[in-house]
Length: 166
Image 1: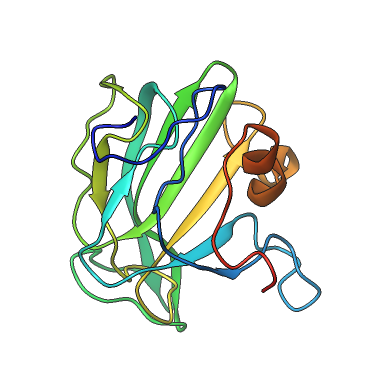
Image 2: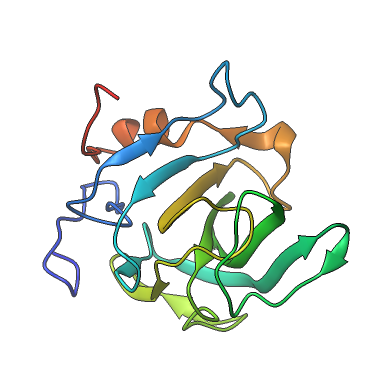
């Protein structure tokens, strides 16, 4: 069990937002460059590390009309970027957590455990409402070329998502 009571699979992975539904899938026809999945949750909901690893990035990435903006405000579809986000390295896999409400609770170099709270759901950056945008990459740095379908990946490590019939 993780520190929040959620289940950790035999492979060492857990749902980053247990009990919350998947609302958008990886690289759909409507969003072919969407490199992750979106999990809906109310603003302020704790985001959990999906696996143990080392924090390799904590960053604000938001802009409007090409000019950097603060991540300490709600974003919108007219903004660009991931907002407040962090990346965790687990072996050779990078998992990215975007659109946090405030700066992530972790820092670069910190070791985290599966299920540990790393931040809270928000809507910073390019976002139409509170949710977690979650990505999994098969290399570091995380790029579009090494992005994998998180839904398929989580199933492969024994973790189920809510609302699989989206």
